[in-house]
Length: 304
Image 1 (tube, rainbow, N blue to C red):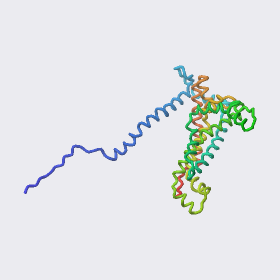
Image 2: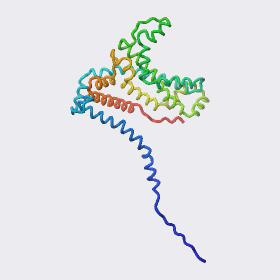
Image 3: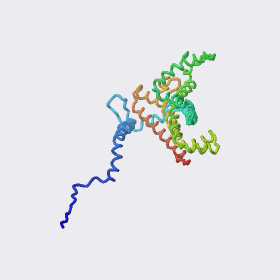
Image 4: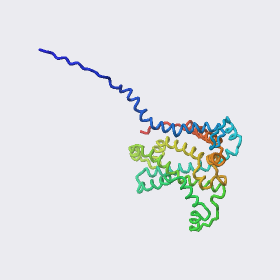
């Protein structure tokens, strides 16, 4: 009886699965990281570099001036007075968060035409900010749309809506409420719809009404999203640009810190000083965000 022996010849070992698992995520992240570094971190680095120069934005010559730009910023109090305008938009942000949360909570339940109302609320956020500025510029001008509507209602007024600082800032803050409520609405609605339906059914069996469901189920569940909305509201109120720039150009004491920075760069050709202003604004937003994150815990609430 003859026995046949078989020999297994190995020509090479395949790549280790563990090494492949470590490399694969970085391959997927390669393109996003390249775009992020190219269009975010490199421009920020250049901006920080320009803030230590006297570059005018046109000439190829850039002289190093050290911290002179930052010294000029912090020794001129009028440069920080424009932050008073941000309080109008911060108050408007509170209004839009409350309104968005209300509609998100109401439309999360089964109501007629709720999809129509969702589209109506979110539609203003899809419109270009420049177009919104021009539309409301004609809306608030003397004899414009608002005055015409008020005259139809029998309310006669000769008030110049954009003629005084208080009226102009209040009017433009109202425009920001109309525009950005949809963004907060979508964030809140997505968070609410991620809540398991069994919680609502259990609450209804226990006799809990809409208010108790909101207080004990919805509000704790959307706490991280609400914290995010507060961060966006604060940073947005500090960096307002499009609406006041289009509607007033910063006149009648409606100038914001960003409008002031843009004027330094493109009207007075002080790109170095404008870059320093941008760095200061970035630092302020980061500090406020850090403080807010420290004061408001971001713990996950387990309702199940």
